Image (cartoon, rainbow, N blue to C red; front, side):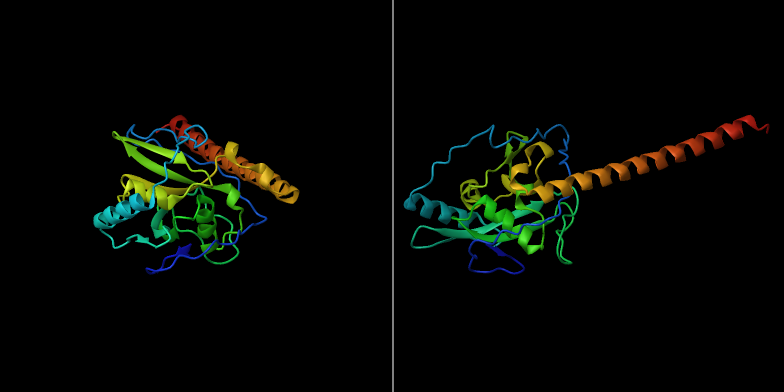
Amino acid sequence: LRWLSSLDSKPLGNPSVVRGFSYVVATTVWKVRAGKVRCPLDVEKEKETHNYLSKEEIKEKVHKYNLAVTDKLKMTLNSNGIYTGFIKVQMELCRPPQTSGKLAPGSNGCMNTLHISSMNTVGEVIEALLKKFLVTESPAKFALYKRCHREDQVYACKLSDREHPLYLRLVAGPRTDTLSFVLREHEIGEVKWEAFSLPELQNFLRILDKEEDEQLQSLKRRYAAYRQQLEAALSEVRTPG
């Protein structure tokens, strides 16, 4: 996997897993736009069986794919049947993740391009994105989703770590309005808590306590401000003009 600041010709191998101690508990807010976006479909609930292609079918699809490309991000088919190409991943994170340096993923909607091979899995793509931005949080916190458009409906489906994004890109074609990839945090109920150590879990509880206190103080300040405004309004009404 390779991060693109410019167009590279060779993808890197498997990135190492960057595990961290800190973890910010956050929920993913799914927005309904104009009544056309349905709730995300969990990959465990919507299993899709991919009929992987023969070498001849791959060759034909790569050729058709490259003819349809408009941004020069073409695929390359090697003699061993493995092909390389580019995918774009949109960042949709609830809040900036914990990092070990100054780099941090851009704001929501930021599109990032990766050069990968047909052998790279969803798990490796997630690790590559986190490694690029020096994210110290565990990859188990994040998930890669595919967003599909079908009959004027938009579906978001979580991909399993074993799926191959470039295969999905090849089959769908290069148009991102047909298929796109999105990196999000797991919903709280979907986090694989068993993947974390005891100190990490204890740290999560401390963070929850801190966030709960911050939210409580913020709520108290807001209602105190409302009370002051109401009391001022009542005072004006009671004071003869």
